[in-house]
Length: 404
Image (cartoon, rainbow, N blue to C red; front, side, top):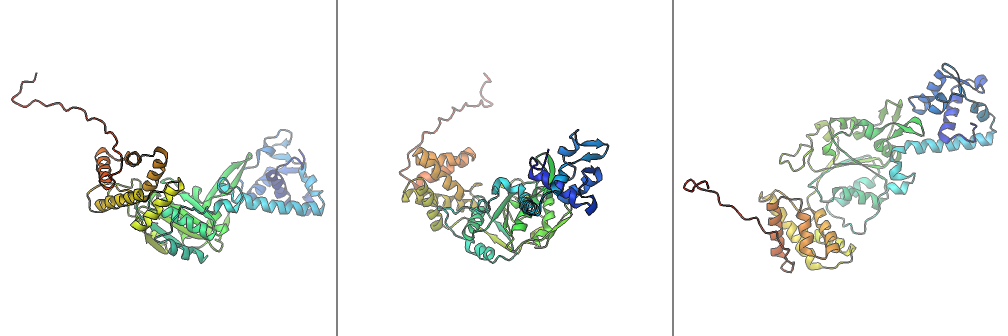
């Protein structure tokens, strides 16, 4: 192997070996295991690369290896060396973002959310926009029932402001390794890769912690991050300070006190010290009827449908269901997301009642019947869907009847 056939990662490792040596020893092609470990530490690697230690042709004796590429790299002229150093710096920056490469593909625009033509700004949109636009460090907690547009609101604020948004969906097992990053296997080498939190800090992006109340006490590793201070990455021995513009937004269905009614299974009672580190808390209900009608009309228009009456019926139906839910009359609620899904189903099946029925299928039979009956009372034009014939009941014998 020579320098021409080395990958960028391999070539960078050879340079790391050279950089650890004194001037008079830089051209020596024999490398000890200790030198390999020092080079590993400088690059955030935990073990020497296999392409050196597993190559029988390179092994001279126990703990001693021959790396002929060292002499070739040192023979480069100054122009080549400067060019390579610039490339190495570029690769280092690229690898710092490696944990989100699937999302970014090395392209800033790919982590800036796309503007949605169907989105209708409402509620706390302007407040969130004002906070994010200052580019000063801020922490925001948004709570509200499922499907009312919390996450979409944050993404569309970032889209409007052309800000990078790094979304992390929190679950019970989310830990420091998921958030900050860790050691990963890349091209046969073990290297450090930044997680979304560190990447957002370095780039001054918006960190979106979605469904944060599903997390466990492992989220307490974010305490210094929530304070706007730097964070120490012990596995790399590096202190990372957030760049200007870094902000944190968390969304949740609860206020961090758990879900007493059992609707949001998996949500946890969150640490008070963690919650207290959020500068602003916004409680978001479902959109007002006038706003929600705009959302439904835009959802219909997306599929080439214009039906003002259908939009009216859907919005009034959802509003009445929510009032009943708040009064304890039903245990379920019709979300804005569900209304949008009904519009999509209607565009496919061209049947309003069927579209509504399909959206209710996940509820228990009594709730399904109750909500569907309510919709039919509002929309007299909706076609009747054949209901399954109930199974005949069998009379049970009384004490006066013979058992056969």
